[in-house]
Length: 154
Image (cartoon, rainbow, N blue to C red; front, top):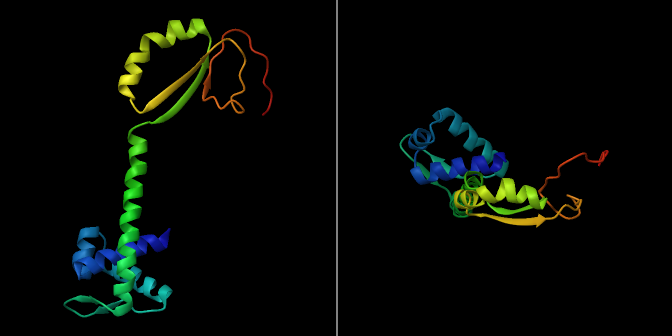
């Protein structure tokens, strides 16, 4: 969302008190940063910053905006960090339906290693030869051996 990006840029400028310092820390051209903040102010319909050649100061609207924007930008950063954790560390319930022989021969020997490597994954097994409905019974994986009937389009 572009407004959140511009909000984060505004927070960086407000914290730094300078477009130059904020642009350096954000690794972006000062002109681009200035244009994005100007566009944000236009969208808001209020000037948020008082600019001078030496420094940037928050106007009254800028102080109000900064107080809320700072919290929102921080919260968004935490959310992205938490979601990034999901990508780095698989977690959740994994439901499998497998025949007894398959589980004994191909899963059991590796189960300890799997659980050690992925401690946040909880496994649930249906160890029977019965045909399961992956969707209605909410299975993630079903393994069956031999000739299977055509399931057709879903």
